[in-house]
Amino acid sequence: MKNVSFTKLNPEDQTLINEAEKVLINGYDPYSQFYVGCVLVTKKGNIYRGVNINTCAYGGICAERSAICQMVTNGEYHIKKLAIIAKSEYFKVKIHSGPCGICRQLIWEFAELIKDDIEILISDSDKEKVLITSIKKLHPLGFGPRLCFGKYRKYLRV
Image (cartoon, rainbow, N blue to C red):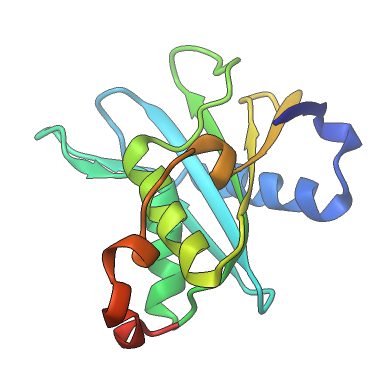
């Protein structure tokens, strides 16, 4: 894991974070007003966007899972990279608001399916600092298809 200045990122990574920032305003969280945007790029170069949605019943979906759902809905399974940014109406998000545990498990699942690590960029709300990491670093000792499916691996779609 390493922290870098947004301005030191390559143009592709800056674009991904900017796209995540653009979509986060579409998030639905009238209760805490904590909005998250996620953009992922696939091996094919397609981009999928997601936002968080939270309800008064304290249930919802994170931006990362929302973007992954968009990807899978379109028949893709190979995540190359994710970019995440969070903002709040009440305070500046000066820390890196990374994927929650459920999202880490889902990202890990796809990393195992493609037998590769997945890079994750996590920006603070002002795009001053960006944490560059990966799912293997965020979710050490994770488990997924290789452990769960065994001889049933042939039934996986990828």
